[in-house]
Image 1 (tube, rainbow, N blue to C red):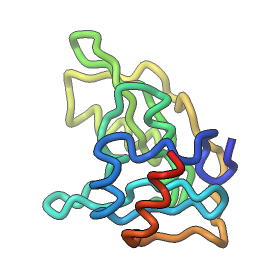
Image 2: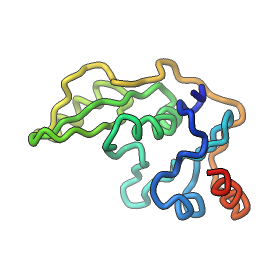
Image 3: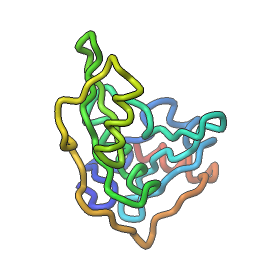
Image 4: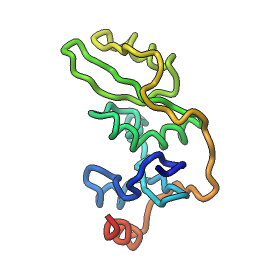
Length: 145
């Protein structure tokens, strides 16, 4: 597992529309393994990909580093269940943030007060880059997938 971005596959992201994401969105470029993770903010709401629910814990782990980096602290992945029993996985900076979310979303619950996954300690890495990729970098990255 990459100590910086927490995954084994250094070309697994972006998951959806990878070329479009790499060409048009700002990326967190892991300084350790080179994996690109979308860290772009939605222009209307200011939200990043990590702010949204994921359908699995494994997918949420792919975006956890961008949350940690944005918040400058170790965030955690929590299992959220809606009133129909459907589970999703959301990243929060703290359990207090989970409680605020649940207060606004009365049809959802979180059965665990501890995150299902967290890295534990936030650390900066010297070779990390936050930027858009060049066309040549996108081509190279996609060829390595």
